[in-house]
Length: 116
Image (cartoon, rainbow, N blue to C red; front, side, top):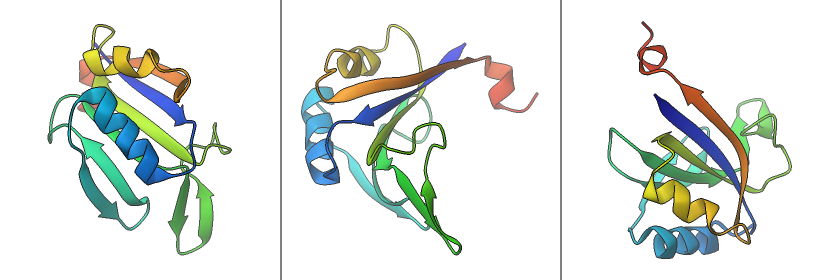
């Protein structure tokens, strides 16, 4: 069973937040872009546990809307996906409530993720 955890970031500056994450996780991020989220940063590979730092606002052809509807007031969000309770990344983020506020943690069964 895995977990998906969402954190709000206590800065409006994505470059500052990325620096916080790189220091905290002792990893370099990969700068990315997609048409809905815009510029974002990713930590981790193509499979397994990943961390994604992105804007709290998403754009499409109809305008701007919150990236996460339950938390529309956060300028920046961190998505920690495919994690576990004993994850070093999760523990590191939880250890800095001055910079990252845990907003939600969802558990899922492995077979739910692959559609079976």
